Length: 301
Length: 177
Image (cartoon, rainbow over all chains, first blue to last red):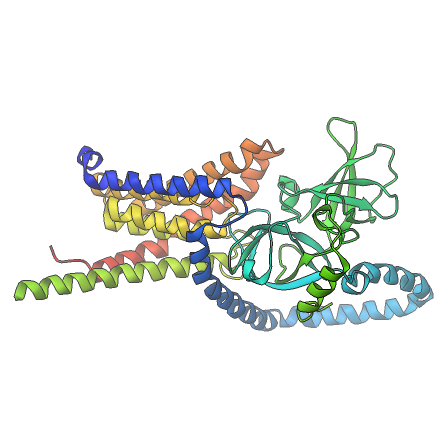
């Protein structure tokens, strides 16, 4: 074995390791941007990943229908029963209608936020070693995607762009401890910071920290983005409070948040490439209008 | 003339073998990235790792290390780590697997399982240290046991099909000595 460590081959391997280390340093210094090697490789494998996801997604749906036929039938019966029950509860219709209208206002993003410019994206890969459900989408810098752009679904906020290549981008989700989102409780007007937590992420939840001890926040409260910092626009639905607890240091409270978007299973997303107040700046009306018009095909909501 | 034909056949076999290895790696990468494929109760194996180790076992330390580094580069483009991180780790693991099979253990299924478990555990522990412990997150031990360890174990066992597949490819396209 000593012969190997004295051989030319070993020196070549050391050279390769040094080059890789150089790539590592370069990438670390240019955080969020892929290097030429990752960009080129990404361009090659992205279409294959997209094809694989489309095939697997279709096959999955087809087999699920067959495998779960009995279950679906049972579910159908249960739903019929629930429907009868719901009819009896029609007396509360007006209340539900008012609440629904409130939710709709949040969800109908495009209508309420004409300044938003969207780019649609399809999830083409999920790294099995990422326990916070990060994913790769099929749109990159050539589509106008930039680092830190917010990523949403019609249900609510999903995360933000963490790395951009030419033809694809990586997204870190609300479940990642590395994300910080300014958050706002619409009922109590409490503010806080949303980020991921190692042991909550397994249950698909994230954490809202720095809630005042005298807060009246409770389970079921809707949490939206506060817009502070200019990374995320104000008023995007994040999720609902599932539990309120006191921090270990006892100074403040924290809330366990169940995101509205199904982060673990999301397949299609919208990337907000531009919005009023992005990065703390106010775009001119002309800029906003022209960029909205150019992306009108993508602005599906 | 006969010698030229022999060299040509050798080259063709070699190119064919490495092309099949590369396609196997690409297929493992794409399947591993797809959440609908091989999702065992929420645990998804890292298919690239057993492929790299299997090839390194049969192709020895030098070629095995370079192939494993290529696998690491591929892994790096999808992961949320610094590009090159997995390439360096897999380069070392590939070289180690090749050396162990060249100078120590014979390349059989038990060796494959041992090497796969070792490589998976080393990669998992390095991830755990660099991506979580260094950042001072809470609840680390529980996170390791409930989230990382199942992935490490499932990944290790996925060497079984790849070991037989690589052994078959290597046997069919082995270069004459």
